[in-house]
Amino acid sequence: MAQNIYDNLDFFSGYSQLPRQVHGLAGAPEWPTLRAMFPHVAGKRAVDLGCGFGWVSRWLVENGAKTVLGVDLSENMISRAREVTTDTAIDYRIADIETIELPEAAFDFAFSSLTFHYVRDFDRLARMIHRSLTTGSHFVFSIEHPIFMAATRPHWIEDEDGRKTWPVNRYAIEGERRTDWFAKGVVKYHRKIGTTLNVLMRAGFNIEAVDEFAPSVEQVRENPALEDELERPMMLLVSSSR
Image 1: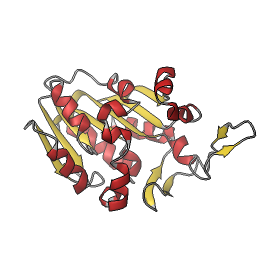
Image 2: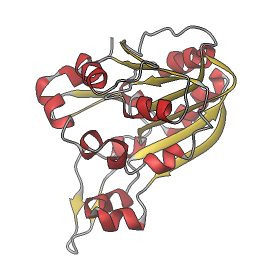
Image 3: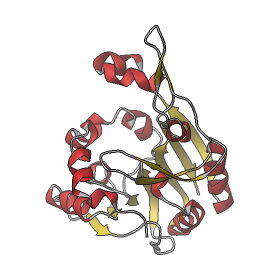
Image 4: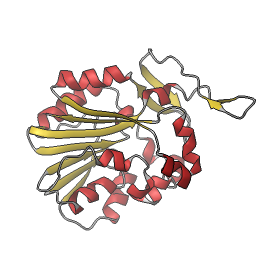
């Protein structure tokens, strides 16, 4: 079973204050780039893996999706999602994506935001998602960029001119990494970019687009804190098709 850090009281309290949780999709700088990878969703049956508060699940229905299954391990997340959702086309369920088995050919679109780096066995998950999708459907997701994950320890170093650098640690050594983020001992799984893409292709997916997201000049101007993300990529965005 995956680590359920989101039901840790300290973690959930801090996480809930992030701009992307307070402001929803408007608070997620990568959202316009990620959204541009989506197919037309009207009439589609979608699954949102690691749905959190349900921001994307609701967006999908608002943009014509027929039904959405939102899945998350956290009772806190699903409880909040249900509180703020009124559309009956969305079904939220508590489930561990490490072990979940979705029905075969039950969905026309699969999505996940910043979840898969918590998953130990990505091979199993990719094969299961492939089986759950209909022919011609799309699978779009974002994960914490493996360079970002590998650059978090030690923390950035500042030179005499005030410029920051992030040493990349053991990038080629894949597997479990632990970090302190709102709570101690948060477990993540580091995989190289090539590993992630090869897993998808072995599962039967075609890679449509890959983006190592960095904020635009306008986004940095509006939110100067994003300037650090120009130094090393924080997110990897992937679009694939079945």
